[in-house]
Image (cartoon, rainbow, N blue to C red; front, top):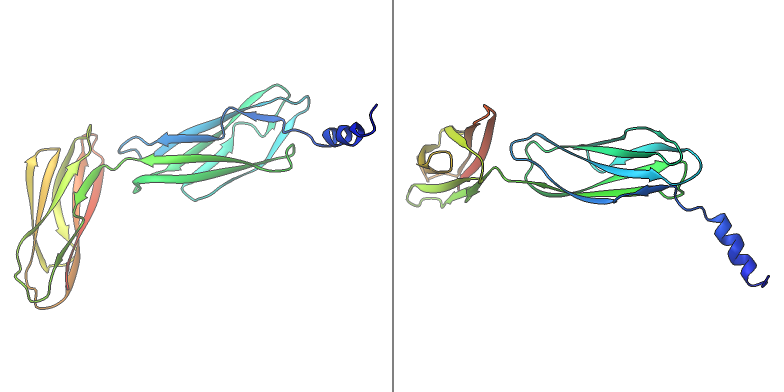
Length: 214
């Protein structure tokens, strides 16, 4: 045998390939509107001739729980890591990581998820501004309900009595306008406008807009 090949053969023998073969290590998950959680799973197969034990599963945030369906995977067996996201109060796209450590691989496996949480309603603009000592005129926040959802809005409450609020229904369940007027602009004031909503399922939600005189 060629002496130059011997070191390479010994090196290949020393390097043990990971036994767990993953169907995928990255997913994009779309959360359902009005749901407080979203779930997915990462599947794998033990391709080795020996059992593999999953010793640790870590996640990159408190909003994500992950666990294997079984910690010991027999040779040739399949399994999965179940991931459960808490999405209440979130909207937008979030990048999350699950790190899986086993007694098989020297390096933990990183499973990544792009979690997409749809916006239930868009508020445009979300913040209203008035200048000090300028006319206290009414300004408007348009509230557009996401397609496929049916929400009934009301009541609307401000965290301060410095504003007068009126909710106008343009298209029931779809489009609303919130009109806000400061009582006085001679001094700096601010408030949050809490817009209460009820879904067809009976679920209650609260959206927030903001007003500032400054």
